Image (cartoon, rainbow, N blue to C red; front, side):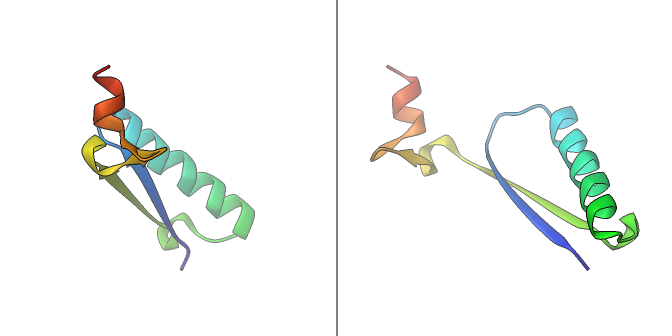
Length: 64
């Protein structure tokens, strides 16, 4: 059973999350020749205060 875990910064619309789940499922199913029913996609949204780039939280970078 393929399991895909995607980590994204918070704030994307629910429709976009649903679409990425759909498209990733389609791709994994096609490439691995696995039934879609066996594919699991987990999307974790990370708060911008918990995601650092170059030692600075994204929440701080965006406020400047």
